Amino acid sequence: MENETISKNFIEQIIEKDIEEGHCKVVKTRFPPEPNGYLHIGHAKSILLNYGLAQEYHGQFNLRFDDTNPTKEDIEFVESIKKDVEWLGADWEDRLFFASSYFDQMYEYAVKLIKKGKAYVCDLTPDEIREYRGTLTQPGKNSPYRDRSVEENLELFENMKNGMYEDGSRVLRAKIDMASPNINMRDPIIYRVAHMTHHSAGDKWCIYPMYDFAHPIEDAIEGITHSICTLEFEDHRPLYDWVVRECEFENPPKQIEFAKLYLTNVITGKRYIKKLVQEGIVDGWDDPRLVSIAALRRRGFTPESIKMFVDLVGVSKANSSVDYAMLEYCIREDLKLKAKRMMAVLDPVKLIIDNYPEGQIEYLDVPNNQENEEMGTRKVPFGKVLYIEREDFMEEPPKKYYRLFPGNEVRLMSAYFVKCESFVKDENGVITEIHCTYDPETKSGSGFTGRKVKGTIHWVCADTAQEVEARLYENIVDEEKGVYNEDGSLNLNPNSLTVLKSCYVEPSFSDAVAGDSFQFVRNGFFCIDTKDSTKEHLVFNRIVSLKSSFKING
Ligand code: ATP
Ligand code: MG
Image (cartoon, rainbow, N blue to C red; front, side, top):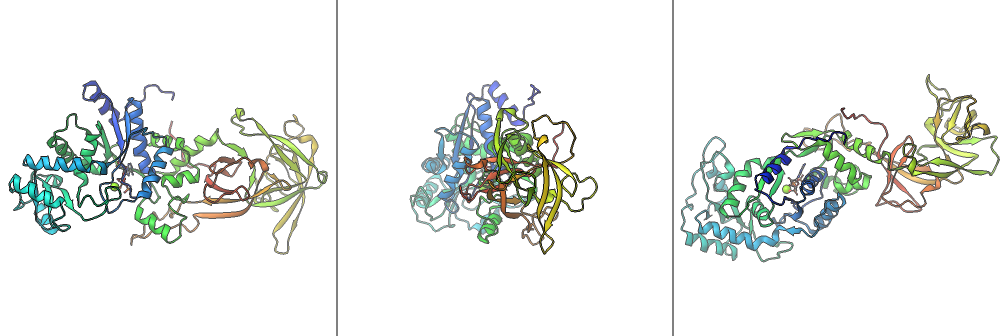
Protein backbone atom coordinates (compact mmCIF):
# COMPACT_ATOMS: atom_id res chain seq x y z
CA MET A 1 0.00 0.00 0.00
CA GLU A 2 1.26 3.44 -0.86
CA ASN A 3 -0.57 5.17 1.89
CA GLU A 4 0.85 4.20 5.26
CA THR A 5 -1.86 5.82 7.33
CA ILE A 6 -4.75 3.56 6.43
CA SER A 7 -7.72 4.60 8.47
CA LYS A 8 -9.02 2.05 10.93
CA ASN A 9 -12.51 0.65 10.59
CA PHE A 10 -14.99 1.07 13.41
CA ILE A 11 -14.34 -2.39 14.84
CA GLU A 12 -10.59 -1.78 15.00
CA GLN A 13 -11.29 1.51 16.75
CA ILE A 14 -13.40 -0.24 19.40
CA ILE A 15 -10.74 -2.93 19.93
CA GLU A 16 -7.92 -0.42 20.20
CA LYS A 17 -9.85 1.57 22.75
CA ASP A 18 -10.50 -1.59 24.76
CA ILE A 19 -6.81 -2.46 24.70
CA GLU A 20 -5.81 1.09 25.65
CA GLU A 21 -8.22 1.22 28.54
CA GLY A 22 -7.06 -2.17 29.79
CA HIS A 23 -10.36 -4.01 29.18
CA CYS A 24 -8.72 -6.50 26.88
CA LYS A 25 -5.30 -8.12 27.05
CA VAL A 26 -5.44 -10.70 24.27
CA VAL A 27 -7.93 -10.11 21.47
CA LYS A 28 -10.02 -13.25 20.93
CA THR A 29 -12.44 -13.61 18.05
CA ARG A 30 -14.36 -16.52 16.60
CA PHE A 31 -16.26 -17.65 13.55
CA PRO A 32 -19.39 -19.47 14.72
CA PRO A 33 -21.09 -21.22 11.78
CA GLU A 34 -24.19 -23.29 12.20
CA PRO A 35 -23.37 -26.56 10.40
CA ASN A 36 -26.51 -26.50 8.29
CA GLY A 37 -25.21 -25.62 4.84
CA TYR A 38 -22.22 -24.68 2.76
CA LEU A 39 -20.44 -21.42 3.42
CA HIS A 40 -20.81 -18.62 0.91
CA ILE A 41 -19.03 -15.40 0.03
CA GLY A 42 -20.77 -13.57 2.88
CA HIS A 43 -19.37 -16.03 5.40
CA ALA A 44 -15.93 -15.50 3.85
CA LYS A 45 -16.21 -11.90 4.88
CA SER A 46 -17.00 -12.86 8.45
CA ILE A 47 -14.19 -15.45 8.56
CA LEU A 48 -11.55 -13.10 7.16
CA LEU A 49 -12.73 -10.24 9.35
CA ASN A 50 -12.53 -12.27 12.56
CA TYR A 51 -9.30 -13.99 11.63
CA GLY A 52 -7.77 -10.75 10.35
CA LEU A 53 -8.49 -8.96 13.63
CA ALA A 54 -6.95 -11.76 15.66
CA GLN A 55 -3.86 -11.57 13.45
CA GLU A 56 -3.65 -7.80 13.53
CA TYR A 57 -3.69 -7.69 17.33
CA HIS A 58 -1.64 -10.87 17.88
CA GLY A 59 -4.65 -12.53 19.39
CA GLN A 60 -6.51 -15.80 18.90
CA PHE A 61 -9.12 -17.00 16.46
CA ASN A 62 -11.54 -19.83 17.26
CA LEU A 63 -13.60 -21.92 14.89
CA ARG A 64 -16.74 -22.88 16.75
CA PHE A 65 -19.59 -24.91 15.37
CA ASP A 66 -22.81 -23.52 16.69
CA ASP A 67 -24.50 -26.90 16.83
CA THR A 68 -27.07 -26.27 19.55
CA ASN A 69 -30.06 -26.81 17.29
CA PRO A 70 -30.54 -30.54 16.66
CA THR A 71 -33.12 -30.20 13.86
CA LYS A 72 -30.98 -28.65 11.22
CA GLU A 73 -27.44 -29.74 11.70
CA ASP A 74 -25.66 -32.13 9.46
CA ILE A 75 -22.24 -33.62 10.05
CA GLU A 76 -21.42 -33.43 6.33
CA PHE A 77 -21.37 -29.66 6.66
CA VAL A 78 -18.86 -29.71 9.49
CA GLU A 79 -16.24 -31.14 7.14
CA SER A 80 -17.06 -28.82 4.25
CA ILE A 81 -16.95 -25.78 6.52
CA LYS A 82 -13.58 -26.77 7.98
CA LYS A 83 -12.22 -27.23 4.49
CA ASP A 84 -13.46 -23.82 3.39
CA VAL A 85 -12.17 -21.94 6.43
CA GLU A 86 -8.80 -23.62 6.05
CA TRP A 87 -8.67 -22.84 2.34
CA LEU A 88 -9.30 -19.17 3.09
CA GLY A 89 -6.21 -19.29 5.27
CA ALA A 90 -7.97 -18.68 8.59
CA ASP A 91 -5.94 -20.91 10.90
CA TRP A 92 -7.75 -21.90 14.09
CA GLU A 93 -4.70 -23.93 15.22
CA ASP A 94 -5.94 -26.12 18.09
CA ARG A 95 -8.99 -24.01 18.80
CA LEU A 96 -11.79 -25.98 17.19
CA PHE A 97 -14.89 -26.03 19.37
CA PHE A 98 -18.44 -27.32 19.35
CA ALA A 99 -21.13 -25.42 21.19
CA SER A 100 -22.81 -28.73 22.04
CA SER A 101 -19.87 -29.60 24.26
CA TYR A 102 -21.02 -26.79 26.57
CA PHE A 103 -24.52 -28.21 27.11
CA ASP A 104 -23.73 -29.18 30.70
CA GLN A 105 -22.45 -25.71 31.52
CA MET A 106 -25.38 -24.05 29.82
CA TYR A 107 -27.73 -26.11 31.93
CA GLU A 108 -25.83 -25.05 35.06
CA TYR A 109 -26.09 -21.38 34.06
CA ALA A 110 -29.82 -21.79 33.56
CA VAL A 111 -30.07 -23.25 37.06
CA LYS A 112 -28.05 -20.34 38.36
CA LEU A 113 -30.50 -17.89 36.80
CA ILE A 114 -33.43 -19.74 38.38
CA LYS A 115 -31.74 -19.60 41.77
CA LYS A 116 -31.22 -15.87 41.35
CA GLY A 117 -34.90 -15.47 40.56
CA LYS A 118 -33.99 -14.49 37.00
CA ALA A 119 -35.62 -17.36 35.16
CA TYR A 120 -38.86 -19.30 35.41
CA VAL A 121 -40.65 -22.23 33.88
CA CYS A 122 -43.67 -21.12 31.88
CA ASP A 123 -46.60 -23.35 30.92
CA LEU A 124 -48.22 -21.06 28.38
CA THR A 125 -48.72 -22.56 24.93
CA PRO A 126 -46.60 -21.16 22.09
CA ASP A 127 -49.63 -19.21 20.85
CA GLU A 128 -50.30 -17.76 24.28
CA ILE A 129 -46.67 -16.75 24.67
CA ARG A 130 -46.90 -14.88 21.38
CA GLU A 131 -50.11 -13.20 22.47
CA TYR A 132 -48.71 -12.17 25.86
CA ARG A 133 -45.59 -10.77 24.22
CA GLY A 134 -47.37 -7.64 22.97
CA THR A 135 -46.37 -5.73 19.86
CA LEU A 136 -43.97 -3.01 18.81
CA THR A 137 -46.47 -0.44 20.02
CA GLN A 138 -48.01 -2.30 22.95
CA PRO A 139 -46.27 -3.66 26.03
CA GLY A 140 -46.55 -7.35 26.86
CA LYS A 141 -48.38 -8.97 29.78
CA ASN A 142 -46.79 -10.98 32.54
CA SER A 143 -47.19 -14.71 32.30
CA PRO A 144 -49.32 -16.17 35.13
CA TYR A 145 -46.37 -18.51 35.83
CA ARG A 146 -43.87 -15.67 36.24
CA ASP A 147 -43.92 -15.65 40.01
CA ARG A 148 -43.34 -19.30 40.69
CA SER A 149 -41.01 -19.96 43.59
CA VAL A 150 -37.37 -20.77 43.00
CA GLU A 151 -37.96 -24.28 44.39
CA GLU A 152 -40.85 -24.97 42.07
CA ASN A 153 -38.89 -23.65 39.10
CA LEU A 154 -35.89 -25.80 39.95
CA GLU A 155 -38.07 -28.87 40.18
CA LEU A 156 -39.96 -28.17 36.95
CA PHE A 157 -36.77 -27.40 35.05
CA GLU A 158 -35.25 -30.64 36.22
CA ASN A 159 -38.40 -32.45 35.12
CA MET A 160 -38.03 -30.77 31.73
CA LYS A 161 -34.51 -32.12 31.53
CA ASN A 162 -35.65 -35.58 32.61
CA GLY A 163 -38.08 -35.88 29.74
CA MET A 164 -41.30 -35.60 31.71
CA TYR A 165 -42.94 -33.11 29.37
CA GLU A 166 -43.96 -33.07 25.75
CA ASP A 167 -42.32 -30.86 23.16
CA GLY A 168 -43.71 -27.34 23.40
CA SER A 169 -45.54 -27.89 26.68
CA ARG A 170 -43.14 -25.94 28.89
CA VAL A 171 -40.23 -23.56 28.41
CA LEU A 172 -37.71 -21.82 30.60
CA ARG A 173 -37.85 -18.04 30.26
CA ALA A 174 -35.58 -15.28 31.39
CA LYS A 175 -37.36 -12.94 33.79
CA ILE A 176 -36.56 -9.51 32.44
CA ASP A 177 -39.28 -7.02 31.56
CA MET A 178 -42.55 -7.64 29.72
CA ALA A 179 -42.93 -3.90 29.17
CA SER A 180 -39.51 -3.37 27.62
CA PRO A 181 -39.62 -1.39 24.38
CA ASN A 182 -37.26 -4.07 23.02
CA ILE A 183 -39.33 -7.17 22.36
CA ASN A 184 -36.25 -9.37 22.73
CA MET A 185 -36.20 -8.41 26.41
CA ARG A 186 -39.81 -9.46 27.11
CA ASP A 187 -38.98 -12.61 29.05
CA PRO A 188 -37.36 -14.45 26.14
CA ILE A 189 -37.39 -18.24 26.02
CA ILE A 190 -34.00 -19.64 26.92
CA TYR A 191 -34.70 -23.39 26.96
CA ARG A 192 -37.26 -25.49 25.16
CA VAL A 193 -38.31 -29.13 25.31
CA ALA A 194 -37.41 -31.03 22.14
CA HIS A 195 -37.20 -34.81 22.10
CA MET A 196 -34.61 -35.03 19.37
CA THR A 197 -31.33 -36.80 18.82
CA HIS A 198 -28.34 -34.52 18.62
CA HIS A 199 -25.58 -35.43 16.16
CA SER A 200 -22.93 -35.48 18.85
CA ALA A 201 -24.74 -35.37 22.20
CA GLY A 202 -27.02 -38.20 21.06
CA ASP A 203 -30.12 -38.63 23.24
CA LYS A 204 -28.61 -37.18 26.39
CA TRP A 205 -30.74 -34.07 26.17
CA CYS A 206 -34.38 -33.46 25.48
CA ILE A 207 -34.11 -29.76 26.28
CA TYR A 208 -32.08 -27.42 24.15
CA PRO A 209 -30.94 -23.83 24.75
CA MET A 210 -32.13 -21.03 22.48
CA TYR A 211 -29.60 -19.16 20.38
CA ASP A 212 -29.81 -15.88 22.32
CA PHE A 213 -28.98 -17.67 25.55
CA ALA A 214 -26.45 -20.14 24.19
CA HIS A 215 -24.37 -17.83 22.06
CA PRO A 216 -23.19 -15.37 24.71
CA ILE A 217 -22.37 -18.28 27.02
CA GLU A 218 -20.33 -19.98 24.29
CA ASP A 219 -18.44 -16.75 23.70
CA ALA A 220 -17.87 -16.19 27.40
CA ILE A 221 -16.69 -19.75 28.09
CA GLU A 222 -14.11 -19.41 25.34
CA GLY A 223 -12.99 -16.02 26.60
CA ILE A 224 -13.95 -14.29 23.38
CA THR A 225 -13.33 -10.57 23.78
CA HIS A 226 -15.11 -9.25 20.71
CA SER A 227 -18.08 -11.20 19.44
CA ILE A 228 -18.58 -9.92 15.93
CA CYS A 229 -21.90 -10.60 14.28
CA THR A 230 -24.17 -9.18 11.64
CA LEU A 231 -26.54 -6.27 11.92
CA GLU A 232 -29.74 -8.22 12.50
CA PHE A 233 -28.47 -9.02 16.00
CA GLU A 234 -28.20 -5.38 17.02
CA ASP A 235 -31.57 -5.52 18.80
CA HIS A 236 -30.47 -8.68 20.58
CA ARG A 237 -27.41 -7.02 22.12
CA PRO A 238 -29.20 -5.95 25.35
CA LEU A 239 -30.15 -9.60 25.85
CA TYR A 240 -26.59 -10.72 25.09
CA ASP A 241 -25.33 -8.29 27.70
CA TRP A 242 -28.03 -9.38 30.17
CA VAL A 243 -27.04 -13.06 29.83
CA VAL A 244 -23.32 -12.54 30.41
CA ARG A 245 -24.02 -10.16 33.29
CA GLU A 246 -26.57 -12.34 35.08
CA CYS A 247 -24.43 -15.44 34.60
CA GLU A 248 -21.70 -13.37 36.26
CA PHE A 249 -18.90 -13.91 33.79
CA GLU A 250 -15.74 -12.02 34.52
CA ASN A 251 -14.46 -10.05 31.54
CA PRO A 252 -17.61 -10.66 29.50
CA PRO A 253 -17.38 -10.52 25.71
CA LYS A 254 -18.62 -7.50 23.81
CA GLN A 255 -20.94 -7.93 20.86
CA ILE A 256 -20.23 -5.77 17.81
CA GLU A 257 -22.43 -5.75 14.71
CA PHE A 258 -21.44 -5.09 11.10
CA ALA A 259 -23.36 -5.11 7.84
CA LYS A 260 -23.73 -8.35 5.91
CA LEU A 261 -22.04 -8.66 2.58
CA TYR A 262 -24.49 -8.97 -0.26
CA LEU A 263 -23.55 -9.47 -3.88
CA THR A 264 -25.90 -8.34 -6.62
CA ASN A 265 -27.49 -10.96 -8.84
CA VAL A 266 -26.23 -14.04 -7.09
CA ILE A 267 -28.08 -16.77 -5.24
CA THR A 268 -27.04 -17.45 -1.66
CA GLY A 269 -30.25 -18.72 -0.09
CA LYS A 270 -29.93 -22.35 0.95
CA ARG A 271 -33.52 -23.07 0.01
CA TYR A 272 -32.99 -21.89 -3.57
CA ILE A 273 -29.66 -23.61 -4.02
CA LYS A 274 -31.10 -26.86 -2.73
CA LYS A 275 -33.84 -26.63 -5.33
CA LEU A 276 -31.38 -25.93 -8.15
CA VAL A 277 -29.34 -28.94 -7.08
CA GLN A 278 -32.38 -31.22 -6.78
CA GLU A 279 -33.71 -30.18 -10.18
CA GLY A 280 -30.33 -30.79 -11.76
CA ILE A 281 -30.06 -27.20 -12.94
CA VAL A 282 -26.69 -26.92 -11.26
CA ASP A 283 -24.07 -29.58 -10.68
CA GLY A 284 -24.09 -29.63 -6.89
CA TRP A 285 -23.36 -27.02 -4.23
CA ASP A 286 -20.00 -26.37 -5.83
CA ASP A 287 -21.32 -25.64 -9.30
CA PRO A 288 -19.01 -22.89 -10.59
CA ARG A 289 -21.95 -20.53 -11.19
CA LEU A 290 -22.76 -20.39 -7.49
CA VAL A 291 -21.01 -18.30 -4.86
CA SER A 292 -20.55 -20.86 -2.15
CA ILE A 293 -16.90 -20.93 -1.17
CA ALA A 294 -16.66 -24.43 -2.64
CA ALA A 295 -18.08 -23.12 -5.92
CA LEU A 296 -15.74 -20.14 -6.05
CA ARG A 297 -12.81 -22.44 -5.40
CA ARG A 298 -13.92 -24.81 -8.14
CA ARG A 299 -14.42 -21.91 -10.55
CA GLY A 300 -10.82 -20.88 -9.92
CA PHE A 301 -11.02 -18.00 -7.46
CA THR A 302 -8.04 -17.86 -5.12
CA PRO A 303 -8.07 -17.16 -1.38
CA GLU A 304 -5.98 -14.06 -2.16
CA SER A 305 -8.61 -12.72 -4.54
CA ILE A 306 -11.35 -13.21 -1.98
CA LYS A 307 -9.29 -11.50 0.67
CA MET A 308 -8.66 -8.58 -1.68
CA PHE A 309 -12.38 -8.39 -2.37
CA VAL A 310 -13.32 -8.43 1.30
CA ASP A 311 -10.75 -5.72 2.02
CA LEU A 312 -12.02 -3.55 -0.81
CA VAL A 313 -15.60 -3.86 0.41
CA GLY A 314 -14.55 -2.86 3.92
CA VAL A 315 -16.51 -3.10 7.13
CA SER A 316 -19.55 -0.94 7.64
CA LYS A 317 -22.71 -0.49 9.65
CA ALA A 318 -24.93 0.04 6.61
CA ASN A 319 -26.29 -2.77 4.46
CA SER A 320 -25.49 -2.52 0.78
CA SER A 321 -24.91 -4.75 -2.22
CA VAL A 322 -21.64 -5.11 -4.01
CA ASP A 323 -21.39 -5.74 -7.72
CA TYR A 324 -20.14 -9.18 -8.75
CA ALA A 325 -17.81 -7.36 -11.18
CA MET A 326 -15.74 -6.27 -8.21
CA LEU A 327 -15.04 -9.90 -7.34
CA GLU A 328 -14.02 -10.45 -10.96
CA TYR A 329 -11.72 -7.47 -10.80
CA CYS A 330 -9.98 -9.02 -7.79
CA ILE A 331 -9.32 -12.39 -9.44
CA ARG A 332 -7.98 -10.68 -12.56
CA GLU A 333 -5.67 -8.60 -10.44
CA ASP A 334 -4.48 -11.64 -8.53
CA LEU A 335 -3.86 -13.87 -11.55
CA LYS A 336 -2.54 -11.21 -13.91
CA LEU A 337 1.08 -11.70 -12.90
CA LYS A 338 0.80 -15.22 -11.47
CA ALA A 339 -0.88 -17.26 -14.19
CA LYS A 340 0.94 -18.59 -17.26
CA ARG A 341 -0.39 -17.20 -20.51
CA MET A 342 -1.07 -20.05 -22.87
CA MET A 343 -2.46 -20.34 -26.35
CA ALA A 344 -5.81 -22.05 -26.57
CA VAL A 345 -8.32 -21.89 -29.39
CA LEU A 346 -11.90 -22.20 -28.25
CA ASP A 347 -13.73 -22.11 -31.58
CA PRO A 348 -11.24 -23.59 -34.01
CA VAL A 349 -10.85 -23.31 -37.78
CA LYS A 350 -7.83 -24.65 -39.69
CA LEU A 351 -5.18 -22.34 -41.04
CA ILE A 352 -2.78 -23.92 -43.54
CA ILE A 353 0.51 -22.30 -44.43
CA ASP A 354 0.98 -23.31 -48.06
CA ASN A 355 4.67 -22.41 -48.27
CA TYR A 356 5.69 -23.99 -44.96
CA PRO A 357 7.58 -27.31 -45.31
CA GLU A 358 5.33 -30.35 -45.07
CA GLY A 359 5.85 -32.35 -41.87
CA GLN A 360 8.18 -29.80 -40.25
CA ILE A 361 7.64 -28.79 -36.62
CA GLU A 362 9.74 -26.03 -35.08
CA TYR A 363 9.76 -24.97 -31.44
CA LEU A 364 9.35 -21.27 -30.79
CA ASP A 365 10.26 -19.43 -27.61
CA VAL A 366 7.15 -17.97 -26.07
CA PRO A 367 7.16 -15.87 -22.89
CA ASN A 368 5.09 -17.37 -20.08
CA ASN A 369 3.83 -13.98 -19.01
CA GLN A 370 4.66 -10.82 -20.96
CA GLU A 371 4.13 -8.70 -17.86
CA ASN A 372 6.25 -10.85 -15.59
CA GLU A 373 9.59 -11.77 -17.14
CA GLU A 374 10.52 -13.85 -14.11
CA MET A 375 8.11 -16.49 -15.31
CA GLY A 376 10.48 -17.28 -18.18
CA THR A 377 9.68 -18.76 -21.57
CA ARG A 378 8.58 -22.09 -22.94
CA LYS A 379 8.89 -23.90 -26.25
CA VAL A 380 5.72 -24.01 -28.28
CA PRO A 381 5.50 -26.17 -31.40
CA PHE A 382 4.64 -24.52 -34.73
CA GLY A 383 3.85 -26.25 -38.02
CA LYS A 384 2.17 -26.10 -41.37
CA VAL A 385 -1.36 -26.66 -40.07
CA LEU A 386 -2.65 -24.54 -37.20
CA TYR A 387 -5.91 -23.81 -35.46
CA ILE A 388 -7.04 -20.24 -35.06
CA GLU A 389 -10.26 -18.76 -33.68
CA ARG A 390 -13.06 -18.73 -36.22
CA GLU A 391 -13.77 -15.10 -35.36
CA ASP A 392 -10.22 -14.14 -36.37
CA PHE A 393 -11.07 -14.55 -40.04
CA MET A 394 -13.71 -12.74 -42.08
CA GLU A 395 -14.51 -13.18 -45.71
CA GLU A 396 -15.85 -9.62 -45.94
CA PRO A 397 -14.46 -7.61 -43.07
CA PRO A 398 -16.02 -4.43 -41.79
CA LYS A 399 -13.89 -1.30 -41.44
CA LYS A 400 -11.23 -1.45 -38.72
CA TYR A 401 -11.11 -5.24 -38.77
CA TYR A 402 -7.40 -5.93 -38.55
CA ARG A 403 -7.40 -9.69 -38.32
CA LEU A 404 -7.36 -12.15 -41.23
CA PHE A 405 -9.27 -11.60 -44.47
CA PRO A 406 -8.33 -12.32 -48.05
CA GLY A 407 -5.20 -10.39 -48.94
CA ASN A 408 -4.47 -9.18 -45.39
CA GLU A 409 -1.37 -9.92 -43.36
CA VAL A 410 -1.31 -10.45 -39.56
CA ARG A 411 1.18 -11.61 -36.99
CA LEU A 412 0.75 -15.07 -35.51
CA MET A 413 1.58 -14.38 -31.89
CA SER A 414 5.23 -15.17 -31.04
CA ALA A 415 5.68 -16.61 -34.56
CA TYR A 416 5.53 -15.22 -38.11
CA PHE A 417 3.54 -12.89 -40.34
CA VAL A 418 1.03 -14.76 -42.48
CA LYS A 419 -0.95 -13.43 -45.40
CA CYS A 420 -4.33 -14.83 -46.32
CA GLU A 421 -4.34 -16.18 -49.87
CA SER A 422 -7.60 -18.13 -50.08
CA PHE A 423 -10.16 -20.10 -48.11
CA VAL A 424 -12.37 -23.18 -48.51
CA LYS A 425 -16.06 -23.53 -47.66
CA ASP A 426 -18.16 -26.65 -47.32
CA GLU A 427 -21.55 -27.18 -48.98
CA ASN A 428 -23.26 -25.29 -46.14
CA GLY A 429 -21.10 -22.24 -46.60
CA VAL A 430 -19.09 -22.90 -43.44
CA ILE A 431 -15.42 -22.02 -43.77
CA THR A 432 -13.29 -25.11 -43.26
CA GLU A 433 -9.78 -23.97 -44.22
CA ILE A 434 -7.91 -20.73 -44.50
CA HIS A 435 -4.84 -20.78 -46.69
CA CYS A 436 -1.94 -18.45 -46.03
CA THR A 437 1.68 -17.91 -46.93
CA TYR A 438 4.23 -16.98 -44.31
CA ASP A 439 7.35 -14.84 -44.48
CA PRO A 440 10.31 -16.58 -42.75
CA GLU A 441 12.00 -13.16 -42.30
CA THR A 442 9.33 -12.01 -39.86
CA LYS A 443 10.02 -14.52 -37.08
CA SER A 444 9.23 -13.07 -33.68
CA GLY A 445 12.31 -11.97 -31.80
CA SER A 446 14.40 -11.77 -35.00
CA GLY A 447 14.37 -7.98 -34.97
CA PHE A 448 12.47 -7.76 -38.25
CA THR A 449 11.45 -4.15 -38.98
CA GLY A 450 10.66 -4.36 -42.69
CA ARG A 451 6.95 -3.66 -42.44
CA LYS A 452 4.19 -3.56 -39.86
CA VAL A 453 0.90 -5.35 -39.43
CA LYS A 454 -2.06 -4.16 -37.39
CA GLY A 455 -3.39 -7.44 -36.07
CA THR A 456 -1.94 -10.22 -33.93
CA ILE A 457 -3.81 -13.46 -33.47
CA HIS A 458 -3.15 -16.56 -31.41
CA TRP A 459 -2.95 -20.10 -32.73
CA VAL A 460 -2.25 -23.69 -31.80
CA CYS A 461 -0.26 -26.18 -33.90
CA ALA A 462 -2.73 -28.83 -35.10
CA ASP A 463 -0.35 -31.83 -35.09
CA THR A 464 0.60 -31.44 -31.45
CA ALA A 465 -2.56 -29.85 -30.03
CA GLN A 466 -4.57 -31.43 -27.25
CA GLU A 467 -8.32 -31.39 -27.59
CA VAL A 468 -9.97 -30.12 -24.41
CA GLU A 469 -13.34 -29.01 -23.07
CA ALA A 470 -13.99 -25.45 -21.97
CA ARG A 471 -16.96 -24.28 -19.92
CA LEU A 472 -17.96 -20.67 -20.19
CA TYR A 473 -20.20 -19.13 -17.59
CA GLU A 474 -22.59 -16.27 -17.36
CA ASN A 475 -24.52 -15.12 -14.36
CA ILE A 476 -26.95 -17.83 -13.28
CA VAL A 477 -29.78 -15.33 -12.97
CA ASP A 478 -30.94 -12.85 -15.56
CA GLU A 479 -29.16 -9.65 -14.64
CA GLU A 480 -31.73 -7.39 -16.28
CA LYS A 481 -34.71 -8.89 -14.49
CA GLY A 482 -33.05 -9.45 -11.12
CA VAL A 483 -32.85 -12.60 -9.04
CA TYR A 484 -36.50 -13.26 -8.22
CA ASN A 485 -39.81 -13.11 -10.04
CA GLU A 486 -42.85 -11.68 -8.31
CA ASP A 487 -43.96 -15.16 -7.29
CA GLY A 488 -40.58 -15.76 -5.62
CA SER A 489 -39.26 -18.10 -8.30
CA LEU A 490 -35.81 -17.54 -9.77
CA ASN A 491 -35.16 -15.65 -13.01
CA LEU A 492 -32.72 -18.11 -14.44
CA ASN A 493 -30.46 -17.14 -17.31
CA PRO A 494 -30.74 -19.91 -19.93
CA ASN A 495 -27.21 -19.14 -21.16
CA SER A 496 -25.45 -19.42 -17.84
CA LEU A 497 -23.39 -22.39 -19.07
CA THR A 498 -21.84 -22.95 -22.51
CA VAL A 499 -19.86 -26.15 -23.02
CA LEU A 500 -17.30 -26.11 -25.81
CA LYS A 501 -16.25 -29.70 -26.49
CA SER A 502 -13.56 -29.25 -29.16
CA CYS A 503 -11.13 -26.62 -28.07
CA TYR A 504 -7.42 -26.97 -28.74
CA VAL A 505 -4.56 -26.12 -26.45
CA GLU A 506 -0.81 -26.23 -26.93
CA PRO A 507 0.83 -29.38 -25.52
CA SER A 508 2.36 -27.54 -22.57
CA PHE A 509 -0.35 -28.72 -20.17
CA SER A 510 1.20 -32.12 -19.56
CA ASP A 511 2.19 -31.24 -15.97
CA ALA A 512 -0.97 -29.30 -15.18
CA VAL A 513 -3.16 -30.58 -12.38
CA ALA A 514 -6.74 -29.97 -11.35
CA GLY A 515 -7.15 -26.55 -9.79
CA ASP A 516 -4.30 -24.95 -11.79
CA SER A 517 -5.13 -21.64 -13.43
CA PHE A 518 -3.96 -20.11 -16.69
CA GLN A 519 -4.62 -17.18 -18.85
CA PHE A 520 -5.71 -18.24 -22.31
CA VAL A 521 -4.51 -15.31 -24.34
CA ARG A 522 -7.38 -13.09 -25.42
CA ASN A 523 -9.96 -15.55 -24.00
CA GLY A 524 -9.74 -15.05 -20.26
CA PHE A 525 -8.56 -16.85 -17.15
CA PHE A 526 -9.32 -20.57 -16.90
CA CYS A 527 -8.98 -23.15 -14.16
CA ILE A 528 -8.79 -26.92 -14.56
CA ASP A 529 -11.97 -28.35 -13.10
CA THR A 530 -11.43 -30.36 -9.93
CA LYS A 531 -14.44 -32.62 -10.46
CA ASP A 532 -14.59 -33.59 -14.12
CA SER A 533 -11.12 -33.06 -15.56
CA THR A 534 -8.75 -35.97 -16.26
CA LYS A 535 -5.29 -36.04 -17.78
CA GLU A 536 -6.69 -37.42 -21.03
CA HIS A 537 -9.70 -35.14 -21.11
CA LEU A 538 -8.90 -31.76 -19.64
CA VAL A 539 -11.86 -29.63 -18.61
CA PHE A 540 -11.36 -25.91 -18.09
CA ASN A 541 -13.70 -23.52 -16.26
CA ARG A 542 -13.55 -19.93 -17.38
CA ILE A 543 -13.04 -17.96 -14.20
CA VAL A 544 -13.45 -14.61 -15.85
CA SER A 545 -12.94 -12.97 -19.23
CA LEU A 546 -10.19 -10.41 -19.67
CA LYS A 547 -12.41 -7.42 -20.19
CA SER A 548 -13.66 -5.55 -17.21
CA SER A 549 -16.60 -3.29 -16.70
CA PHE A 550 -15.43 -2.50 -13.20
CA LYS A 551 -13.13 0.37 -12.32
CA ILE A 552 -11.48 1.10 -9.01
CA ASN A 553 -11.49 4.76 -8.08
CA GLY A 554 -8.18 6.49 -7.56
P1 ATP B 1 -27.09 -17.92 5.86
O1 ATP B 1 -28.51 -18.00 6.33
O2 ATP B 1 -26.86 -16.97 4.74
O3 ATP B 1 -26.46 -19.26 5.61
P2 ATP B 1 -26.40 -17.64 8.60
O4 ATP B 1 -26.30 -16.35 9.34
O5 ATP B 1 -27.55 -18.51 8.87
O6 ATP B 1 -26.26 -17.30 7.06
P3 ATP B 1 -24.42 -18.85 10.19
O7 ATP B 1 -23.79 -20.17 10.03
O8 ATP B 1 -25.38 -18.66 11.31
O9 ATP B 1 -25.13 -18.53 8.81
O10 ATP B 1 -23.36 -17.70 10.20
C1 ATP B 1 -22.05 -17.81 10.68
C2 ATP B 1 -21.48 -16.43 10.75
O11 ATP B 1 -21.42 -15.84 9.46
C3 ATP B 1 -22.32 -15.49 11.61
O12 ATP B 1 -21.47 -14.80 12.47
C4 ATP B 1 -22.99 -14.58 10.62
O13 ATP B 1 -23.23 -13.34 11.17
C5 ATP B 1 -21.96 -14.53 9.49
N1 ATP B 1 -22.60 -14.25 8.20
C6 ATP B 1 -23.62 -14.91 7.63
N2 ATP B 1 -23.97 -14.35 6.46
C7 ATP B 1 -23.14 -13.28 6.28
C8 ATP B 1 -22.99 -12.29 5.26
N3 ATP B 1 -23.79 -12.27 4.19
N4 ATP B 1 -22.03 -11.34 5.42
C9 ATP B 1 -21.22 -11.38 6.47
N5 ATP B 1 -21.31 -12.27 7.47
C10 ATP B 1 -22.25 -13.23 7.39
MG1 MG C 1 -27.92 -19.00 10.96
